Length: 300
Ligand SMILES: *Cc1c(COP(=O)(O)O)cnc(C)c1O
Image (cartoon, rainbow, N blue to C red; front, side):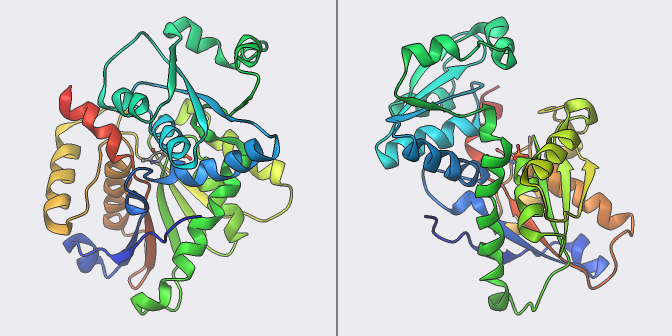
C-alpha cells in the first residue's frame, strides 16, 4: 500500500561528537498528498470500513489536524466519501482549505460540542445522518490504528543494509497519543527499545493509552520509554526550539515542525548530551510528518 519512505543518515555535529549514529525515516515523504504517520494509523481503519461495506469514513479533529488531512487525502485517493467533525467554530486555515479541496464534508461542533465526543450517545445522531460511513476515533487511535504502524518497522528493516547497518539499538519518535509508538513496540515484540518523545504534558494519558493498546493486543512483550519533550504544553513554542529547528533544517536539509518532530529531535539532542546513550549507539528517528500543520504556525 505504501511506497517506501527514504531512510537517510542524519549528519549533525552533536551526534558526531557523541559518537552516535541516527538514521531518519522520512514518513513526510511517502506521498505528495498523504504525509506522515497518520496514513499508517488509517490503514487498518480503511480496511475495516471496506469489510463493513461502508462508503466512506467519518472522524474528528481540529482546524490544523494532521489526521483529518490524511483522511481527506486518502478518501480522495481511494474514492471514499469523508466527513470531518471539527473542533470550534468555522475557520479558514490552510488545512481546512485542503480538507474541502479533497471533498471532505465538514461540520463545526463548537468547543462544547467537541468536548462531548467521548460521551455515550455522541455518535448516535451522526450515525443516523451518515448510516453508510464508518466512524474512526480522533487521531485514528486504538489498537486498529496501532496495528497499521507495524509497516513502519518493515520499511526500516528492508533498508538497513543500504545504510551499511547490520542492526540498530532503538527507535525515537514523537508521541501525541502514543498509538504509533504502541504499534512499533508491538511490531518489535521487545526486541528493540522504542523511545517516545512526548509532545503533550505528562497528564495527557499517553502512558495509559499505550498500556491499554498493548493489553488489548494481549501478548507480545513491549520495551518502551517515554521522555518529556513537551516544553510546557502541547503546541507551545519557545525561541530556543524555533532556533534549533531553523538551524537543523539549514544544516541537514530536513524540514521539521514545532509541534511534534522539532520537539522530538530537540529532546533527542538533550538525551544525547546527557550522556545516557553509549558511544556507537545507532538509532532510527521516525519523521512522523505533520508539515502541512505548520502552515498554521507560519500564518499565526
Ligand atoms: C499525530 C502525530 C504524532 C503523534 O502520533 P500518535 O500516534 O498520536 O502518538 C506525531 N507526529 C506527527 C507529525 C503527528 O501528526
